[in-house]
Length: 238
Image (cartoon, rainbow, N blue to C red; front, side, top):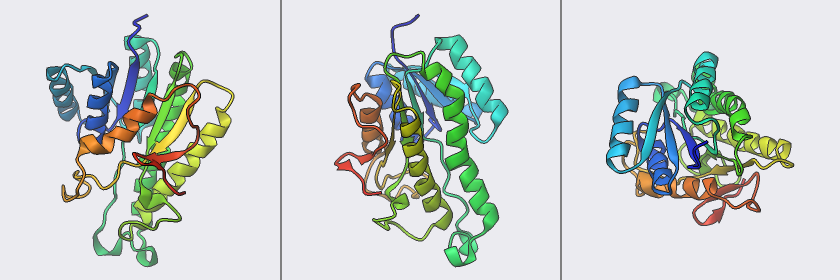
C-alpha cells in the first residue's frame, strides 16, 4: 500500500476546494479531486500536477447516490483507503425574487441547497467511512460558514444557505459523537469571507487563505479537537 496519505476534496475544481486540494498536496498528500464536471475536473487535475501536486480526478456528484458509490469504488481501486475527507462541495442557491428571504422562502430552493450542502455531506461521508476506517489517522473536515452560526448572525439574509450550514454544524457534532471511540476525527471549518464565484469575487480573503483552516484540521494530531467549529483564529461560536 502506498504510504503517501490520500485525501478526497469534494467540489475541488475551483475556489476554496481547489485551494484545499493544492494546500494538502503541498503537505505531501495524494489528492483526489472530486467534481461532477469532467472538463473542469480534468483541468484542475492538470493544473495541480503542474504545480507539483500528486492529484487524480474522481467523478463525483454529491447529490447522486450512484455517483457517490462509484466514486468510493474508484478511490478504493486507486488508493485502497482514504486518510482525509474534505466535504467542500456546496451551493448558495438561487437568490432572486426573495427566494432566500425567510418570509418568502422558496421551498424548492431550500430543498436544492439542502440536497447539496447537507444531504450531500451525509452521502459522501457514509460512503467513504469504510475507506477512512482503514487509515491510521483519518480526518473529516466539513466546510461550513459563520453564516450558519446561531450566535454571530453574519452576512445577508440567506435563509436556505445559512440554515444549511447550521445543520451541517449539527451533523458535524453528531458524527463526532458517534465516532468518539474511533480514530476518525470530525470538525467543521469556516474559511471566512473569500473571493469566489459565490461572493462574485468581491471579498477580502483569497481562496488560499480560506483553505488554511481546512488543511490544518486535516492534519490534526490524534489528541486534536473533535466536533468543533473553527477558523484560523480558533473556535467559532455555534
